[in-house]
Image (cartoon, rainbow, N blue to C red):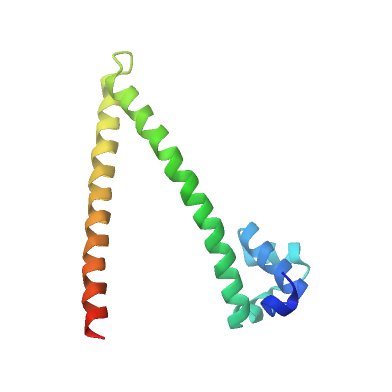
Length: 127
């Protein structure tokens, strides 16, 4: 994107990429060729933070879609282990524990999302 569109300089865009690709601000500053202090100053600027959040959101969206597609494979693998007579009983019990724990977690998340939807509808009606 051009500077006119995002309001960011090429150095700032490079710093955003570095932040998203590195584990620490120190590493990001080295890769971007700017000081840590400069990155922290930029992080305080709304346009910089908004672009960082936007690009980070795109990456997170891609990763979560990939994880969802892998989840089906993982569940199939757990089912294979669970039903395999060749797998020791101790490991099959661990698989049962994993499945039950995650099923409860998913159910809780599902119910929380439903409750949030109801609350949002109520708030929107009141406005």
